Length: 99
View (cartoon, rainbow, N blue to C red):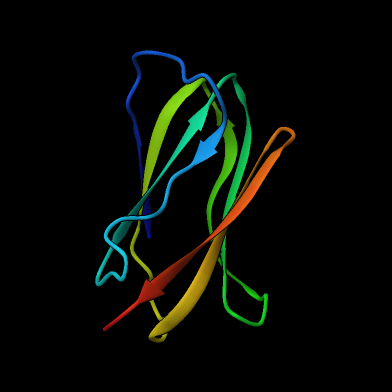
């Protein structure tokens, strides 16, 4: 389950993917990212084997700072990776789920 929050306000100077918080987490965590322009964003979560376990976003977002709350359902404890692809920008970070 996910929810999206747009901060609005000033346009960031660069694309960025923030570390999720809290981390480790249970039952939910927030992932924030900055966009310098309107662009298609794909934000996905993968397990340690590289298997996609969740799609948090696959849509166009306006320039600005955005936050997505990730509440995993049916995932086991462990380390996962979240990856953003936004235009030419791509980055991956690690998150840990503890139940």
